[in-house]
Image (cartoon, rainbow, N blue to C red; front, side, top):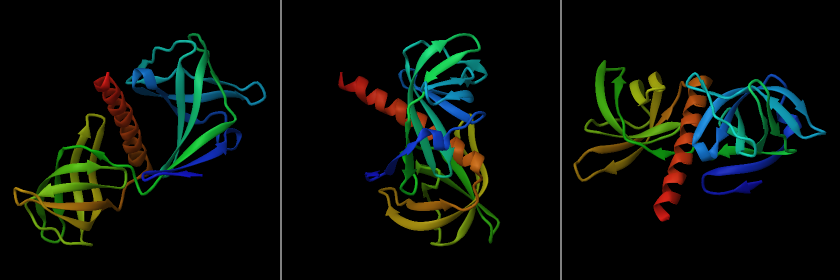
Length: 225
């Protein structure tokens, strides 16, 4: 198992974690996009898998033979990456290379990305709405900036937070886990941990962060040219 500041990376056998019928995400790094697909057949001896044409926003992704891709499946706070490439692209017949090894990426807590969005907290005890602005965001929680004083270990309700048009968080219980400090505008910065977040929302957050990271790395490489 490999370790760095953000993740544990463990090599695992593909045949132990992938089955016919599994829903998967198909990431096309060069296109900076992730589509939804499903495993149709698996041939571990020939190292070939058949998948449904990946869909993104109700449209099929444009695929090209020889193009590299990553297949992703999710397991709680982990995501499993299978590095592959396209072997054959037909209308209903997508064949991809099936390696023997996948990489299980276990988040150390949760990977955070810097992002600024406006949201609303509810102080349940006082029935008071508290506006805030995010500073970073993960599947495990958020760092926020606001005028109000919050109290460590107290639980609040995240009433609404629009991250993206396809990712809207609402009515999620969250607890204050740390006071970071004051900024130059005398606003207070807090770290909050999500308490009640279902698997579907957590998966959407992980997907969003993966795509955000891919796009950020691409911009960094373009900026260095």
